Amino acid sequence: MKLYNGTSPNGMRVMVFLAEKNLDIPTTQIDVMGGDTKTAAFLARNSLGEVPVLELDDGQIITESLAICRYFEVLHPAPSLMGRSAAEQANIEMWTRRMEQQLFSTVGSIGLHEMPFFAQKLEQSPDYAASLRRALPKKLEWLDKEISDGRPFIAGEEFSIADITGMAALMVCGFLNIALPNNVAHVKKWADSVMQRPSMPQMPG
Ligand SMILES: N[C@@H](CCC(=O)N[C@@H](CS)C(=O)NCC(=O)O)C(=O)O
Image (cartoon, rainbow, N blue to C red; front, side, top):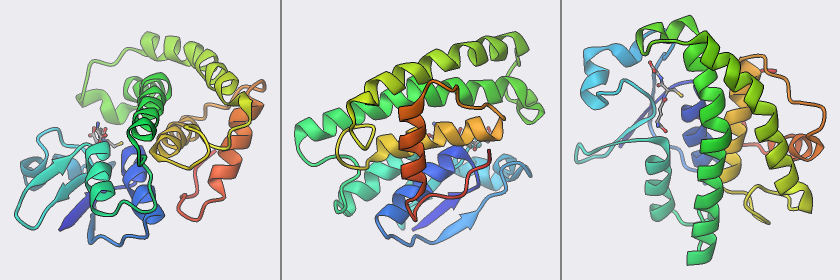
Protein backbone atom coordinates (compact mmCIF):
# COMPACT_ATOMS: atom_id res chain seq x y z
CA MET A 1 0.00 0.00 0.00
CA LYS A 2 1.25 3.48 -0.80
CA LEU A 3 -0.18 6.90 -0.05
CA TYR A 4 0.68 9.75 -2.39
CA ASN A 5 0.21 12.90 -0.38
CA GLY A 6 1.38 16.48 -0.19
CA THR A 7 1.25 19.54 2.02
CA SER A 8 -2.28 20.72 1.28
CA PRO A 9 -5.66 21.00 3.02
CA ASN A 10 -6.99 17.67 1.74
CA GLY A 11 -3.64 16.03 2.31
CA MET A 12 -3.81 17.34 5.87
CA ARG A 13 -7.21 15.69 6.37
CA VAL A 14 -5.77 12.25 5.64
CA MET A 15 -2.51 12.91 7.53
CA VAL A 16 -4.38 13.93 10.69
CA PHE A 17 -6.82 11.05 10.34
CA LEU A 18 -3.95 8.54 10.14
CA ALA A 19 -2.11 10.20 13.04
CA GLU A 20 -5.24 10.01 15.21
CA LYS A 21 -5.43 6.30 14.44
CA ASN A 22 -1.71 5.88 15.04
CA LEU A 23 -1.25 4.39 11.57
CA ASP A 24 2.03 4.69 9.71
CA ILE A 25 1.33 4.22 6.00
CA PRO A 26 4.20 4.30 3.48
CA THR A 27 3.91 7.69 1.84
CA THR A 28 5.41 9.29 -1.24
CA GLN A 29 5.57 13.05 -0.78
CA ILE A 30 4.10 14.97 -3.70
CA ASP A 31 5.16 18.59 -4.22
CA VAL A 32 1.77 20.05 -5.20
CA MET A 33 2.96 23.62 -5.78
CA GLY A 34 6.02 22.29 -7.60
CA GLY A 35 3.77 20.61 -10.18
CA ASP A 36 4.21 16.96 -9.16
CA THR A 37 0.46 16.33 -9.55
CA LYS A 38 0.69 17.14 -13.25
CA THR A 39 3.27 14.52 -14.24
CA ALA A 40 2.16 11.66 -16.50
CA ALA A 41 2.93 9.16 -13.76
CA PHE A 42 0.75 10.98 -11.25
CA LEU A 43 -2.09 11.62 -13.70
CA ALA A 44 -2.12 7.89 -14.45
CA ARG A 45 -3.04 7.37 -10.80
CA ASN A 46 -5.48 10.29 -10.54
CA SER A 47 -6.72 11.85 -13.76
CA LEU A 48 -7.82 14.90 -11.74
CA GLY A 49 -4.21 15.57 -10.78
CA GLU A 50 -4.93 16.00 -7.09
CA VAL A 51 -3.67 14.58 -3.81
CA PRO A 52 -4.30 12.51 -1.78
CA VAL A 53 -4.19 9.19 -3.64
CA LEU A 54 -4.07 5.76 -2.00
CA GLU A 55 -2.77 2.81 -4.01
CA LEU A 56 -3.61 -0.61 -2.59
CA ASP A 57 -1.37 -3.66 -2.92
CA ASP A 58 -3.57 -5.08 -5.69
CA GLY A 59 -3.20 -1.84 -7.65
CA GLN A 60 -6.64 -0.40 -6.81
CA ILE A 61 -6.56 3.38 -6.63
CA ILE A 62 -8.63 5.31 -4.12
CA THR A 63 -8.78 9.09 -4.46
CA GLU A 64 -10.95 11.55 -2.50
CA SER A 65 -9.74 12.20 1.03
CA LEU A 66 -12.96 11.06 2.67
CA ALA A 67 -12.98 7.78 0.73
CA ILE A 68 -9.40 7.17 1.88
CA CYS A 69 -10.39 7.95 5.47
CA ARG A 70 -13.38 5.61 5.18
CA TYR A 71 -11.10 2.81 4.00
CA PHE A 72 -8.91 3.13 7.10
CA GLU A 73 -11.90 3.59 9.41
CA VAL A 74 -13.33 0.23 8.28
CA LEU A 75 -9.97 -1.52 8.67
CA HIS A 76 -9.11 0.20 11.97
CA PRO A 77 -12.38 1.17 13.69
CA ALA A 78 -10.72 2.31 16.93
CA PRO A 79 -10.48 5.08 17.80
CA SER A 80 -13.67 5.86 15.96
CA LEU A 81 -13.50 9.02 13.83
CA MET A 82 -16.57 8.36 11.70
CA GLY A 83 -19.00 7.03 14.30
CA ARG A 84 -20.02 3.59 15.53
CA SER A 85 -23.82 3.37 15.62
CA ALA A 86 -26.00 4.30 12.67
CA ALA A 87 -27.05 7.50 14.42
CA GLU A 88 -23.43 8.46 15.21
CA GLN A 89 -22.30 7.77 11.67
CA ALA A 90 -25.14 9.82 10.23
CA ASN A 91 -24.49 12.71 12.62
CA ILE A 92 -20.77 12.80 11.85
CA GLU A 93 -21.39 12.56 8.13
CA MET A 94 -23.93 15.37 8.38
CA TRP A 95 -21.42 17.61 10.15
CA THR A 96 -18.60 16.64 7.83
CA ARG A 97 -20.70 17.60 4.82
CA ARG A 98 -21.71 20.83 6.56
CA MET A 99 -18.05 21.64 7.22
CA GLU A 100 -17.24 20.87 3.60
CA GLN A 101 -20.14 22.71 2.03
CA GLN A 102 -20.35 25.74 4.29
CA LEU A 103 -16.68 26.35 5.09
CA PHE A 104 -14.14 24.23 3.24
CA SER A 105 -15.62 24.71 -0.21
CA THR A 106 -16.07 28.45 0.42
CA VAL A 107 -12.46 29.06 1.40
CA GLY A 108 -11.21 26.52 -1.14
CA SER A 109 -13.00 28.39 -3.91
CA ILE A 110 -11.48 31.67 -2.73
CA GLY A 111 -8.06 30.07 -3.17
CA LEU A 112 -8.96 28.58 -6.54
CA HIS A 113 -10.15 31.95 -7.84
CA GLU A 114 -7.33 34.05 -6.35
CA MET A 115 -4.11 32.05 -6.49
CA PRO A 116 -2.06 32.33 -9.70
CA PHE A 117 -1.19 28.62 -9.31
CA PHE A 118 -4.77 27.66 -10.23
CA ALA A 119 -5.04 29.88 -13.31
CA GLN A 120 -4.55 26.82 -15.56
CA LYS A 121 -7.15 24.80 -13.67
CA LEU A 122 -10.20 27.01 -14.12
CA GLU A 123 -11.38 30.38 -15.39
CA GLN A 124 -10.68 32.53 -12.36
CA SER A 125 -13.10 35.19 -11.20
CA PRO A 126 -11.69 37.70 -8.67
CA ASP A 127 -15.26 39.06 -8.22
CA TYR A 128 -16.50 35.62 -7.22
CA ALA A 129 -13.59 35.26 -4.78
CA ALA A 130 -14.43 38.67 -3.31
CA SER A 131 -18.09 37.72 -2.89
CA LEU A 132 -17.07 34.51 -1.08
CA ARG A 133 -14.79 36.53 1.20
CA ARG A 134 -17.80 38.71 2.05
CA ALA A 135 -20.00 35.65 2.64
CA LEU A 136 -17.56 33.80 4.89
CA PRO A 137 -18.11 35.71 8.18
CA LYS A 138 -21.83 34.77 8.20
CA LYS A 139 -20.94 31.12 7.70
CA LEU A 140 -18.51 31.26 10.62
CA GLU A 141 -21.15 33.01 12.72
CA TRP A 142 -23.56 30.20 11.84
CA LEU A 143 -21.03 27.61 13.08
CA ASP A 144 -20.35 29.68 16.19
CA LYS A 145 -24.04 29.66 17.08
CA GLU A 146 -24.30 25.92 16.41
CA ILE A 147 -21.45 25.05 18.78
CA SER A 148 -22.41 27.62 21.42
CA ASP A 149 -24.22 24.81 23.28
CA GLY A 150 -20.88 23.95 24.89
CA ARG A 151 -20.11 20.75 23.02
CA PRO A 152 -16.37 20.24 22.74
CA PHE A 153 -16.36 19.04 19.15
CA ILE A 154 -18.21 19.83 15.94
CA ALA A 155 -20.31 16.67 15.95
CA GLY A 156 -20.73 16.39 19.72
CA GLU A 157 -18.74 14.86 22.54
CA GLU A 158 -16.08 13.09 20.47
CA PHE A 159 -13.40 14.30 18.09
CA SER A 160 -14.24 13.20 14.53
CA ILE A 161 -13.55 13.68 10.85
CA ALA A 162 -15.92 16.67 11.05
CA ASP A 163 -13.37 18.46 13.26
CA ILE A 164 -10.55 17.55 10.89
CA THR A 165 -12.52 18.97 7.96
CA GLY A 166 -13.36 22.14 9.85
CA MET A 167 -9.70 22.60 10.78
CA ALA A 168 -8.69 22.08 7.14
CA ALA A 169 -10.97 25.01 6.28
CA LEU A 170 -9.31 27.18 8.95
CA MET A 171 -5.92 26.12 7.62
CA VAL A 172 -6.91 27.56 4.24
CA CYS A 173 -8.08 30.75 6.00
CA GLY A 174 -4.61 31.08 7.54
CA PHE A 175 -2.94 30.47 4.21
CA LEU A 176 -5.12 33.12 2.52
CA ASN A 177 -4.65 35.61 5.39
CA ILE A 178 -8.33 35.51 6.24
CA ALA A 179 -8.70 36.45 9.90
CA LEU A 180 -11.55 35.01 11.93
CA PRO A 181 -14.17 37.64 12.81
CA ASN A 182 -14.20 38.93 16.39
CA ASN A 183 -17.65 37.57 17.15
CA VAL A 184 -16.92 33.84 16.79
CA ALA A 185 -15.53 33.09 20.25
CA HIS A 186 -16.87 29.51 20.27
CA VAL A 187 -15.20 28.74 16.96
CA LYS A 188 -11.92 30.19 18.27
CA LYS A 189 -12.16 28.17 21.49
CA TRP A 190 -12.88 24.97 19.52
CA ALA A 191 -10.00 25.65 17.09
CA ASP A 192 -7.56 26.42 19.94
CA SER A 193 -8.44 23.20 21.74
CA VAL A 194 -8.32 21.02 18.60
CA MET A 195 -4.94 22.55 17.68
CA GLN A 196 -3.53 21.12 20.94
CA ARG A 197 -3.94 17.58 19.59
CA PRO A 198 -0.59 15.98 18.69
CA SER A 199 -2.06 14.92 15.32
CA MET A 200 -2.48 18.54 14.17
CA PRO A 201 0.17 20.20 12.01
CA GLN A 202 1.23 23.76 12.65
CA MET A 203 -1.03 26.00 10.61
CA PRO A 204 -0.15 29.35 9.13
CA GLY A 205 -1.87 32.46 10.43
N1 LIG B 1 -12.15 16.18 -3.45
C1 LIG B 1 -10.74 15.91 -3.40
C2 LIG B 1 -10.00 17.21 -3.61
C3 LIG B 1 -8.51 17.02 -3.72
C4 LIG B 1 -7.80 18.35 -3.95
O1 LIG B 1 -8.42 19.38 -4.25
N2 LIG B 1 -6.48 18.31 -3.77
C5 LIG B 1 -5.69 19.51 -3.94
C6 LIG B 1 -4.89 19.79 -2.68
S1 LIG B 1 -5.96 20.22 -1.35
C7 LIG B 1 -4.70 19.31 -5.07
O2 LIG B 1 -4.02 18.31 -5.12
N3 LIG B 1 -4.62 20.28 -5.97
C8 LIG B 1 -3.65 20.26 -7.03
C9 LIG B 1 -4.19 20.93 -8.25
O3 LIG B 1 -5.40 21.24 -8.31
O4 LIG B 1 -3.40 21.15 -9.15
C10 LIG B 1 -10.38 15.23 -2.08
O5 LIG B 1 -11.13 15.37 -1.11
O6 LIG B 1 -9.36 14.56 -1.98
